Figure 1 (cartoon, rainbow, N blue to C red):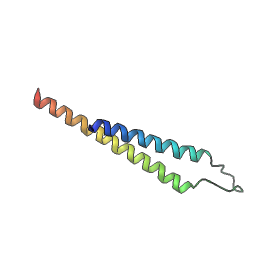
Figure 2: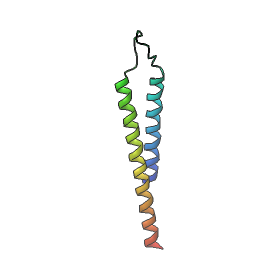
Figure 3: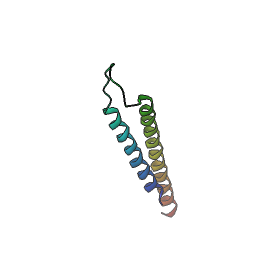
Figure 4: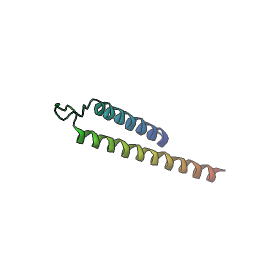
Length: 76
């Protein structure tokens, strides 16, 4: 598996986590008298994890691109 493919897979996974957390947060009523079925702390953690996973995947993609450019310079 190439590093670029791995990075893209990681970005897609992070996007999926973000969309799932956002969907659960959209169910939150915000009414003081209602019973919440959404755990805001858990969803905040899920959003932070998705952000961090996306950032790591972007870093992997950048590093893979730099490695490819270095290899091409050596061969060219």
